[in-house]
Image (cartoon, rainbow, N blue to C red; front, side, top):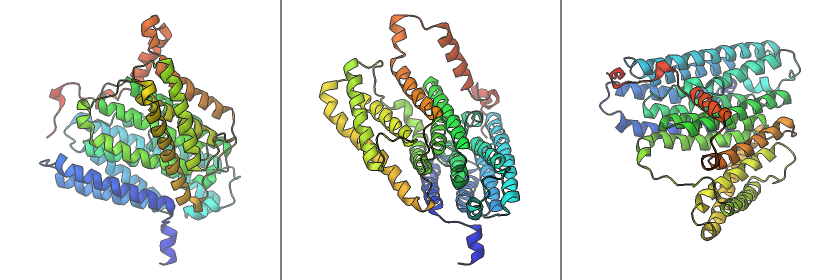
Length: 447
């Protein structure tokens, strides 16, 4: 293998993880599309574009040259827009593609400006050499990292660049699957690729955490308001991308990559199965939970947190930003336990304890596995706790409790005016752009 190839490509653990993920999801989506699009007039064109997209994304995640990375990034987004539109005769679909293209164009401009600044400061086109350079204190590094962050935010539908994602639901189901499981994760991959530079600027990491937590909370709130399955999934993706950014802001890059992988696999499954969602039987969680069920769920959550700490090799009472992950594992395990305990609390307590402990072990084990694979990159660097991290944890707790017990208003009193106004404002903010909505079947011209 010659030196020129090594300069252009960097097949490191991150690249291998991402190429494997993209290839697997692409195979699943392609297999689904063979039946889903059978008889479509653009059947062959779809598979040509899908193959090119998988190839361009593979180049993007393994590129070590700034120019090659930028070209692969832009090509991947152009191919995704073409797949989103699919049939330009459908005006709503075309409007969705145009909106996404404008968003990607802004991100590409910020990314290009960031690369120019980084090259000007370091005189390097190799990403490996660039992130190792001793120029972190240079005046232009901070603007470059900020521009790179904006580019990542536009790609991953981070608030306030989320509208393109919630307006993309006209895309064929296979396109939605590979979009939400693949390309939307590009922002996290980009930040991880330049992680050594971000780790030298704690204030930027804190800003990323705040942006990520805001997006996660808004996306989760909006998801609960949706009646349309695909719109609910889009808001869910926004929330998950926000949590991925929050983990990056905590300095826990391998944990963010683990989240990216699991979210990508699960979201691809959800979109490919969205056609049957209306027939699914849902659990009746019976909110608000009874006091006994809630207390038992907290016990199960504690067990799940210990399982996560044991499997991930972290202290359950960490004095750094790992504590935020411990809280998330506790809340997730508690919520999972509630679905088991909502009916027969005492009878189901033992199964709930067993399943939540397995949940914690699986979650922590996946983080530890990715951390081990990415160990040579040395990107698991928890940061000291600050006021923003504590505020973020309090916001998570309050949001969870509000979700569980807000229905008490229905039984005791009429919701206050501020709550009603807030609900309407949030519902309006979660809606797609009007031009991307097919409001009547006569507007559906899919020829």
